[in-house]
Amino acid sequence: IPLFFEKKERYSEFKNVAVIYAPKELLLSRLMSRNGLNLEDAKARVELQMDIEQKRKMAKFIIDNSSDMEHLKLELEKFLGQICAIS
Image 1 (tube, rainbow, N blue to C red):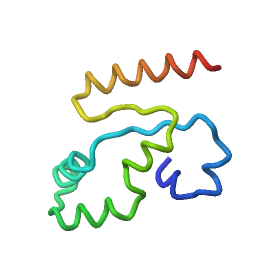
Image 2: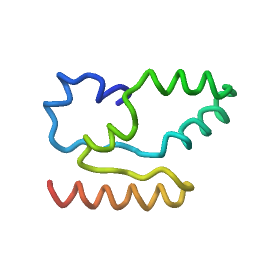
Image 3: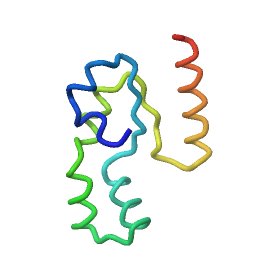
């Protein structure tokens, strides 16, 4: 959910929150590549949201998206296993 963490009053209602994580530098690179933005515009867009490292600390589950699609698929499978184990 975009801007989930920014809605603090809603965040407290949930105990099993996941975040899809990539380091800020990689987020910027992907944003510039995908949206054709320069570094300044990409930074401005990323800074509209809560810092990714802060989101990472607040989440119970971290899905690492700092590599390729195969790695992300493995991360998602791991996450699904974790979720199923607590259900």
